[in-house]
Amino acid sequence: MVYFSIIIPLYNKENFIENTIQSVLNQTFQDFEIIIVNDGSTDKSEEKILQFKDDRIQYFSKKNEGVSQTRNFGLTKANAAFVVFLDADDYWYPDFLETMHHYSTLFPKQKVFAAAIEIETSKKTFRAAYSIRKTGDFEFVNYFRASSKESVILTSGTVFKKSIFKKTGVFDPNIQSGQDTDLWIRIGIIYPVLFIWKILVRYTHDENSLSKNASLMNSKMNFSKFLELEKTNPDLKYFLDLNRFSLAVKSKLTNNKMQFDYYYNGINLKNLSLKKRILLTLPSNLLQILIGLKLKMTELGLGSSIFK
Image (cartoon, rainbow, N blue to C red; front, side):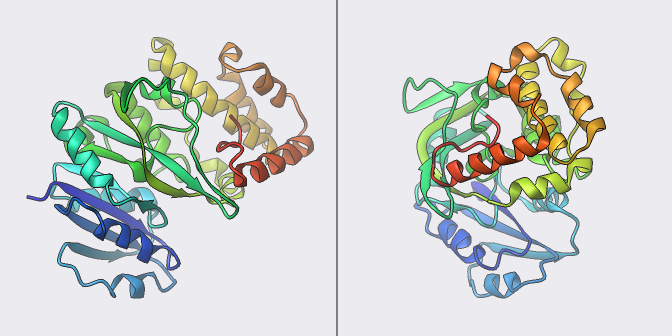
């Protein structure tokens, strides 16, 4: 049995998929399988994949169903005890799997292992900012408190013990935007994260993600499944309120008052900084200007989050 199953969901990434696959094949630790699931791509992604001749690559093609169904399908094909979901436009440094293997054998009872990332924009590549106090090469962290800036669990930068999904469930196909966060919450409720400070992943920043998210507001997560638990889990409540703030702002940008009220009314304003509380009161046209400015700053490495 291989040590790692690497699941790559693919949809129209012809300009990136070769580098992503090559970054896996270049790993110093070679005991892995690659499971590529083509989610109905309409570009030349398949042609790029078929150029690779490696017995460790399993390739599946299916109709377009969305990234959640695609990742879940890949998970059913995984043979290893440890799985990684690698996005088709991200990149691993050569020692990613070796480092993850080291920590997974050093701490055999640990279930979730995450690495620091760097973010690549059209202007600059820079280290992500984390809300964690550094005490060594790695930290055991609570997902919710550790993710008030950059999330410590990133799809392409985290190794999971496959067995945890029996408890947490898998990606929710009913959520078209925010399905990652929904699963990370379910994982964070049960499991601590071993966070490694070494940068092992390069994440490609999508400069159009804000507009894409705005078009999917009706299918975003609404946190309803966590309403009871957040009453007794202050770390979860704090984390959810930060996300409600972000979604409230996006609702205002799309002039969706009903959604804005839903997210806003769920927030304990004491969990927000004064800056965030002020942003919630601003008109949408002013918010749009500020967000455009923040996007430009992000491209220059002056902040990796739009709303935090």
